[in-house]
Amino acid sequence: MRCVRLRAAGWVAMLAALALCSSPATQAQQLPPDYAAAMKTWIYSLAMTAAEYGAPLVTMYALRDNDAVGAKAKAKPNTVWRMEDISTPELSKEAGYVTPNVNVIYGFGFLDLRQEPVIVKAPDSNGLYYMVEICDMWTNAFAYIGGKATGYKGGTFALVGPGWKGELPTGVTRIDSPTPWVLIQPRVHVYIDGKLNLAVAKNVLNAIQPVGLAEFSGKAAQPAPNYDYPAPVFADPNLPVSALDFKDPLQFWDLFSLAMNENPPPQDQIAALLPLFRPLGIELGKLWDRTKLNPVVLDAMAEAAKTIAPTLNKLPFGSFVAGAFIQPPTIGNPGTDYATRAFIARVGLTANTPYEAVYWGYKLDTTGRPLHGDSKYEMHFKEALPYIEPGFWSITLYDAENNYTISNPINRYMLGSDTPLKKNPDGSFTIYIQSSNPGPDKESNWLPSPPGRVFYLIPRAYAPAQATIDILSNPHSWPVPAVMPVN
Image 1 (cartoon, rainbow, N blue to C red):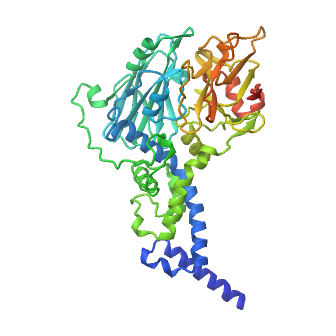
Image 2: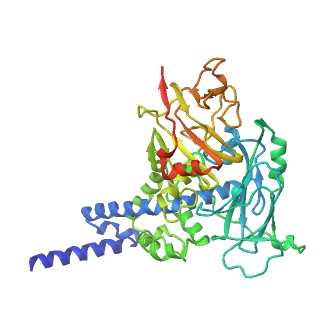
Image 3: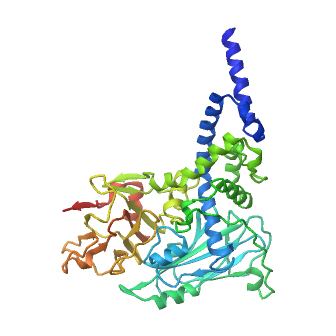
């Protein structure tokens, strides 16, 4: 009998604690210290789960502010901001975009599909590699134009938002978007036959044009909405948007709630996952209101918001082979693999699906130490990453602190199929990673590293061959090289 009473008392206390999650602040002192501590532990765990789930969406919200709707936006919605060059350190910072590919020039275009479909016209590139990645606001790459998906001959495509009823013009390929806002991200290869040809790449990039359905059909363009979104306020504006480094950590939850209500997740996630977040005040159909939550809850949510991005940035992820972190095959469009989605949004925002591009990363050498510009390293490749023409492969070096490219004396950020690598008769080659020039006989294979700073490396292949795609499912199927420290 006494056991029953204790259990009942415990349930009553627990239910009281749960009720206090959404109690006014004045009731905070009603919780005994041990219950307050237990509640904070539980809420923090729940908030970390919610932050993992919502971080990609908040990152896209912040990127949209940076590129399309904020005070210093690069291009208004339904147009494309086109970078004038590869992602140099300066342009990387301006874009706020992490781990950029420097074999291409980028475009960034946030499209608002709420009023009408947006037509995207793509060119015939005469065989030059390009593609347009199409991401929903949860960072899922749900469709492509160009690349292996549709080829390089061009075409006309309509991006259609949820719930739109209407007919498209003849000859237009329909692409249905899961969210009302999407990001189109053109990438155009800047090398032709191993030589930089920025002018040709720019012509292809400029020909990738979005236009509203009404205007495309010869009618008056729809009037632009008033975009009055709260701006993210970051503690350090020099960090990329995916750092989620808010001056007020609770702004993370303000923006998560706002962005989620504008761009709801799939129905199965609404039914199965969102009820888990109700004790946090996160619900579909209403905006998050911090004034209605207990201070214990707010403290735990603030701590989770501060913790999630640094945790993701240092999280060992995927398969660990030869010192390399090989990404899971769910990269790019992970579905319910929320951990992969959150990790990639932090360190490789809008990474592609393996069919279109393959990546992995190195943060450690073979001794387990972080890669550092004061050390020297060698990487021996038995062969280059297999790809399908007109694609390419490369390995690029990035700053571990801000995820951008790094200035160096020869302005070389990558090596690969676009550079004149010195190879052995059997096709193998060695890359030298160090801050000082390794000498004339090795200079063609030198990837400059930053003295005094930690860095990481990303190999990638665009238009990858099947053998490269298979690495993500079976990392031992291809000779993945290691980063070897040398004296």
